[in-house]
Length: 438
Ligand code: URA
Image (cartoon, rainbow, N blue to C red; front, side):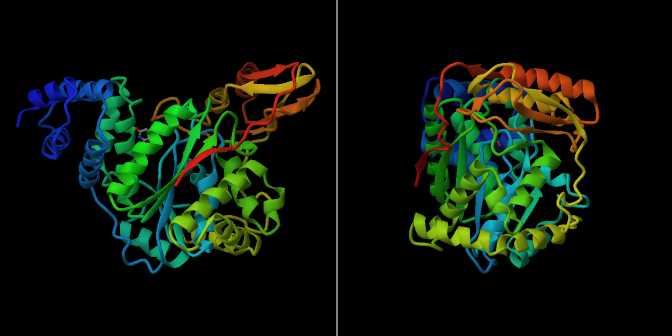
């Protein structure tokens, strides 16, 4: 087989055979295909796309480039959720123990944040002692015993993706549905869950800005998941404003865990509660533990209100050596002092915002990465209080900035102020759940 012929075939828009796709991925991973030829191949895919069969094959080859976990020994249906990333998205921290309390096993491999989107692993690292790396056997044992475990993906999971993603990042080929699909699914499939529910975020704080783009990605993700024998469901959720109030690592971890505490659900931000329940209910229903959406939601609410999910959260975090002061309101998490408050300059309605800028404001306080190697301040964060459609009066506090360095908090607040659109016309609140695919 010849790499030039394969690049040429894709350039002409022809469908590649499984053997050709394997040749490219294996050759690039073992170093026999150089970066410049792989870059040309990726760009040809960017322009010409891939069929569902090709995308599924690409995913499979990338998956088989590394280890796959064997979840067949778990004594209950396994399920996982993947979010395409957003601002203030701390759902995994609630959903994993909640799903466990509903009777599922949740082996979750998570990633770090980059740019304006946060990552679950960074949020978990705000918990003193929490171990994000361990051997696969221990990860599966904790999942079996506690119902869930969340760790970072090691280099042994889909190593082809790491190498290909690094090249996509510097060749303007990240925003390509088949390549995104193979990248996400090769990693998600490796942890072995039988059911995968996707939270496909859409809006100014998301990867996918429009619902049409989101639908194309959803269709590719579900086709690949099903081709690999998994049950799939997708919820399209709004990411035109942060999810919940807290944005930032320790702040988000506290908001998520406080919501699970007995009585915490009623105090928690409504959008966070709704999205967590809907995603968990889909995991429960699609796994076959409830016959329909209403029954699944009832199971989820019972697990939350009874305190069972809180108990699962404590057991899971303790099993991964996390040390929290469970009786304290702040759980002993270190959060930076309040540096300043951003007030509304005028009366009006919050019409909208560039949500991406709210995520980037964290980077102004060293609480998000601009580059992969940037160090993170896990204590700094924002309480984002404004909601689209809300009436605001001059002087109302729109956001609070927690940061040990006032000049950085000022830069972050300026960025957030510029991102908000306060107008004179009344506007409707945004829908959170935009659509679904079952
Ligand atoms: N997330 C991934 O893991 N891969 C992509 O290509 C895009 C988002």
